[in-house]
Length: 365
Image 1 (cartoon, rainbow, N blue to C red):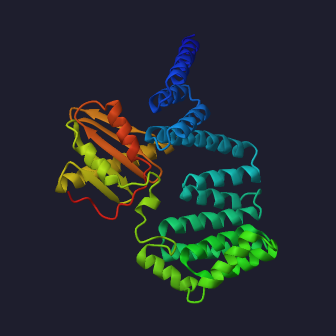
Image 2 (cartoon, rainbow, N blue to C red):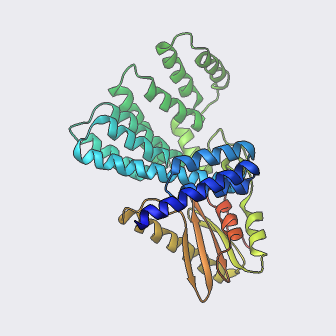
Image 3 (tube, helix red, strand yellow):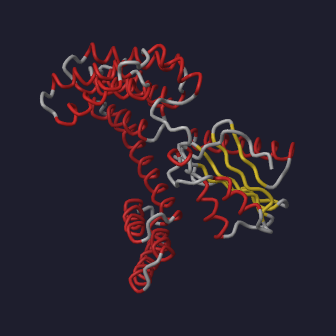
């Protein structure tokens, strides 16, 4: 009975939120309606509302963040469904969808495990070689180490051997060699693709472009060494922080502005092994960054072990105040306030997560 009443009141709130949105469209009223849908677990409606809001108010951080969270929750739900189906009625289409979802969400280690499980199952077919090559390539693009690059090349060549005449392995090799700058090999890939699709205008234009630039291009081995040494692919600009950040900005001004607020003790941004911290200094800043990493790691591990899905926000409250962490797929933002986390601070925290900003060195101030 209580469940029915809660659903009734929730739907009543949705009707009111729709009317407020219709009478006064704004990022706030769009976010309010999306939040009501989220409370009922209606992730598709959350995404639709946020997309409509972003169409009217492009670049709104809160709507973009809510849309991304809903997408991830929907994806996690589908992942759970596929795993259940694989236990009862495994088939290649499910293995393929599971792999693609994991690759799309950048869960590459899990994707690699699924590929190996699929390859040793009775449902294995040649499709598994394409997905193995794709996983290996994405891992290399994230890692940039020479060994990962060679592993990607081996996997791509294996896929080409198992699927002759299939364009997908060739396109993976084209992406690999183009990013490396091994343009002669890339040109050869396009030449092979043109044999499969003669007269394709896009491929013909690509071939001409590569032919003009491939004379002094390095070999794959030489290019792998150069990428490992510099940490940069040939198609990356000298200053590409903006290109790597979907929000097109630097994270430091956001941290600085947060740390200047009277209720904020510390604001930090974590990506990989690097953390930028504003507020605490020296060893205190290092301890804070380490604590944020540990809490984040523990929260994500607990979510996986208990099957709770993706961790969207972590909050710890005590006499010290509130430590809130908002994880992105590759990074996380954190804010330590002296009291409870206000809606304003929560919105600012949401703006940090998912920026994928450059963190070339620790913030010294």
